[in-house]
Length: 74
Image (cartoon, helix red, strand yellow):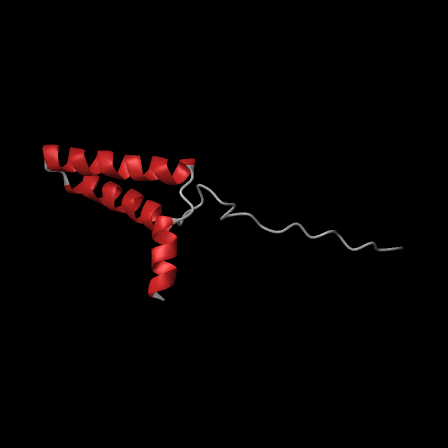
């Protein structure tokens, strides 16, 4: 299990994952500067999705497999 977590954290860094990390860090800095709890929620969301590599932003996470329609004869 620890191997899987380490593999998720340290591999598979693509553009959208870096972008989510950048947004998370930006929101965290803004939350500190403005003392705004709503920005902390945004920061937490973006940081969690980037570190866990989850979400619909990449790697075909929302992709549904195409099934060929059945050939029906009338």
